[in-house]
Length: 456
Image (cartoon, rainbow, N blue to C red; front, side):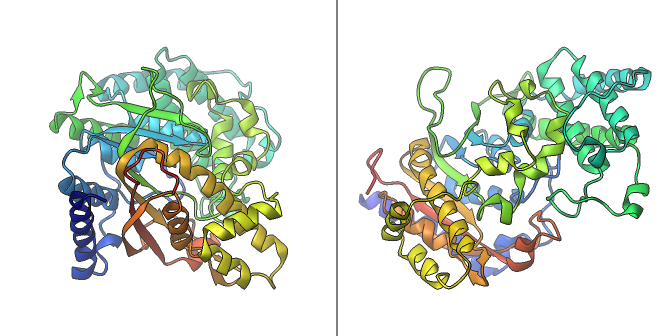
């Protein structure tokens, strides 16, 4: 590695570590995790802390001022996207969940707060005047998850949104509807999994129209705040972000689609937080998204968003990392060779039920399958920041940070540093077993090899 890169690595390492040394709770942002500037448009599982991303971007950009673009291959609710645009940086991101892509497309703009206020008033008028009683959604279990009254209210909201002629406005309204579905469904809001609320919870809540009006009002204020912040920084021109944003609904284990100019979208930094294990036993993003997506026109999200995403409540999670546990012995052997940390964990789990080792190996196999495509998003010598949690399986910690480190080094990446952060403020369901057993995350920083496409 050239001397300049060694110097930059050392400087970045010292900057990140010194913040943790001077204040052990610095990276936790305890009591300072406000979701401002549009971050709070919707409650989404396990959202990253905006202030943490903001600090990471600040420290990296001060070390390497030539940075122009950021990437996130597991974009989720779009925290990294929003913080990148607030610095005027280009962005490329992807996610396998249509609900995540919808939320990110709204945050990417255009940002027309005044026009949205007018269109919102028109939308509320259409909903109020709606006298139809037909139900706009039709899926197995609809009567289990929604009262008849809620179905009718949600249907009138859906009809009202569909009558708006602008895609950018409909997407904004779909996000408000998604949050409304979460709050008015019969599923508990204390967990990301689908569980029926208690009888008391079902009676002690507002109706769907009231909830939607409140969510819409709050989101208009949040979106106006985002627009104001972008405008004050000089990154908004006639409602549009001045940089480039490329978002893709897709699997991180496949190549990123080419941009509009026919070239591969690349970035200078990657900041991402992948799942910590298979969704079914960690955070069920897909199950959480199942009910909201039933009421949204998928075509408004992405041309590739089809009904088969909603085949079952578990379909999106099945398509995610570790969703398929079928794995051949030679694949396990190859993974063991590439990661001594994984091999050690599998040896420790050898006496446990077979499904536990299956969960771990299937997830690592799929994470390993993402790495070549993640590296292809990043320019040679680019910086990667992975925010990871080490989950427990069979009472044993799975050191995802060490496993990922093994896999990255095998493809020519160089470790810069790793800092620990406590996660008191990360949005995790209170009844989620992962939240109960995971108190820390690791911020792992690597640099891609200097040769584009290097695989070790």
